[in-house]
Image (tube, rainbow, N blue to C red; front, side, top):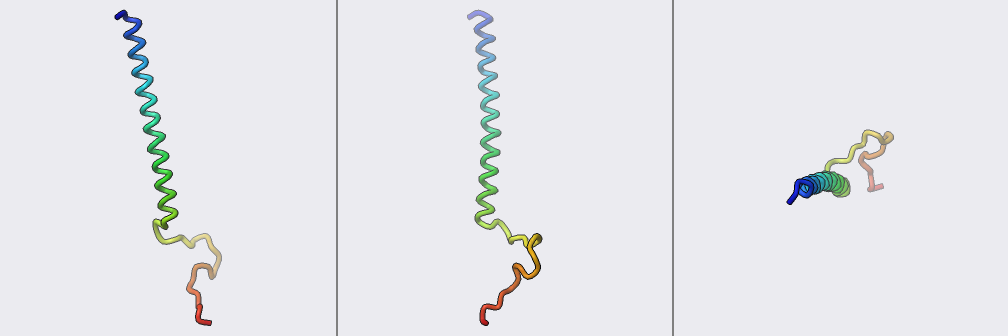
Length: 64
């Protein structure tokens, strides 16, 4: 093996490593986004009524 093929092989390994790191980062980002969507759909907590008008979200008398 000559030095050119060794350098070429090393550079190919480095490029593959970089691509793998980028793919892992993107996958984690996508999984975090999906987790946020699922939590929103399942109602991860009590709904916030901070931005609604007066009388919205209160108790309703349904016996009348």
